[in-house]
Length: 275
Image (tube, rainbow, N blue to C red; front, side, top):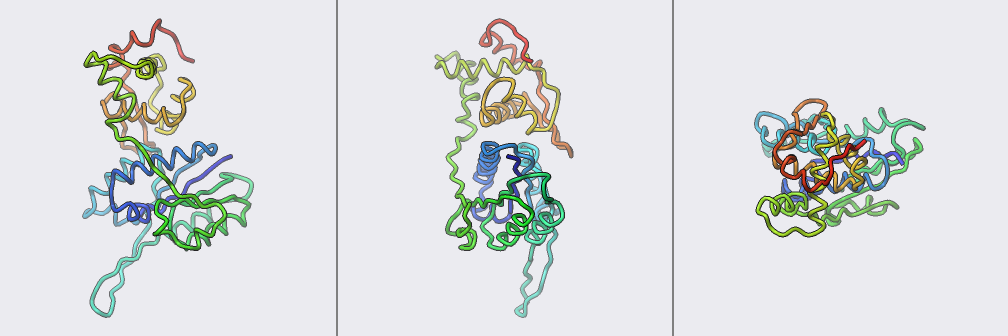
């Protein structure tokens, strides 16, 4: 099944208490859950454009980093300001309108995704789901906070709460194995396998490509799950062995001459070519 995921980023970020680490972990989990269901065509992030202004440069940089790291597509949503009678200024973003326009204008019968997943707690999205259904699409709703999710969404037949129990970078199995190896500590069989997989990356010689594509190639050629491939890429990025280029095509490149691969070569056994 071909899948598209549409994320109401502001809603998600607020539900998670404006916690950047939790938000990134949830986005990682969303991508992983989508891949388990089928062929993930795109994960589109709808965010109000005040996140990218001069006053929110740090927020904008962080969102760009999330896009590059997790293969997201960003959709900037314009905002409007209105003055109330008591002199306050309220800002209204147009995420709802932009999502609706996307479903109306870019979702077509018999082509593209067969399943559209809305990640939000906003009940207005039920209307957008109905528009997609009228075009022959299946739809689902995912949310991270039941208490903050509209009752209209909870009534939908295919509604799921996102439960995240995701280890920190310090618990990344590949990173743990590398640290133990460099300290010459005793390794478990699983950790030896992790080091072998890292070393085999040097045999693959994958050229720089988009993050999601790189993860898919690693998964297929090493025979590991998408989640494991993502964790391997995460470890390589954390150690500056892999580098994410901040460009429109979200390219990740791996330094195959890095000393790490040379150090771990013995764990891979006889040199082989992975096709």
